[in-house]
Image (cartoon, rainbow, N blue to C red):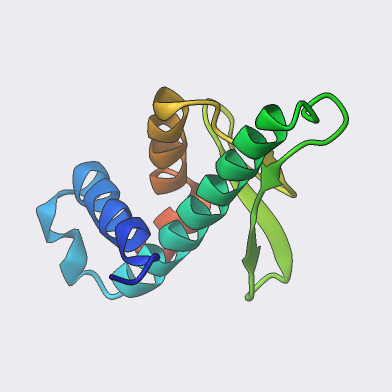
Length: 118
């Protein structure tokens, strides 16, 4: 199984929860699904790197952050739980609850809403 498939399935579920089961009929669904998949993959990568830094006792000198490159604006953006979104990199989710908050923030971000035509 492709390693990215899990991120795509999670993104599809997050969009369905946030916008209803018929969200996949919207014209911007594919773009929104892609955007969320990229964000989730980047966040998971940063989470994994941080765990490895902790294992190596290097977390005090190095950090792991994430973001997604938006081709249309040529900027890096990151959804931030409780803060919407921002240009630049965001801190990785610290735990499962952090990933849930990230998913909610990403789905409700102005970028994803725009892709879905809202």
